[in-house]
Image (cartoon, rainbow, N blue to C red; front, side):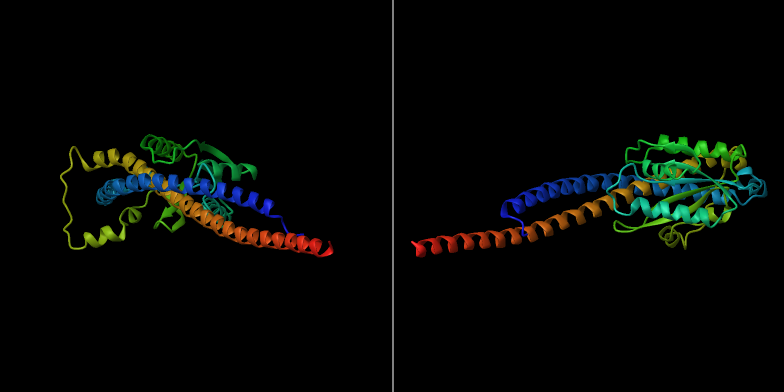
Length: 295
């Protein structure tokens, strides 16, 4: 039985109300995206220069024997999973969770312990009975240097104490406003070759530049020891900035698609309502004419 014009009109009002909500959420996500992207862009030069300096210092034999550069023996590893606090962002959370699960399945001999940053990842693995050693919830959606330092120091302490043989980060790497790439990278132990890896744009700019011979006081070893915690903190900060930027971008796109779907459905139901009204009016006219002819 076809719907009446009154029922269709009620559905259209409901859809238009939903469209206003999705439009507002899209605008909020766009504003947050701009702030987090600015923070990420501002932090990258510092992180790259710190990485470059550490790579130079890591060339000495005494530095290469540093405990953080040594591969540990053991079957326990920590997977730091970065997800969002809220949903409504398309496949943002499901993609990174699926990647983390597949990575852990490919290494079945490893005893994986989860360190969840974000509510969605914690809820997913908690329902499945996975070992979660720590959770950082209630994130504001903006990169926080204090939280990054807290996470870096916590992971460093667990690695140095022998609680974990390695630490990996699972996060959505920001590529563009429309693309984020789920990535798993090693956080600890440190690898000198990985330190030498820089962003392609930076490498192109520095292709013809001469290496700077720094004079370090009191000694390269002391400077290296002082810079290592800052490097680890900056890596966590940049990772959080990429996660939040990717999250806001994914939510903005998802809400934009939802708004367009509401508009399309509203137009479709409006056309259907007009046809139903025409049918109803035609039926009433036929009844009136039939009644007049009978009289």
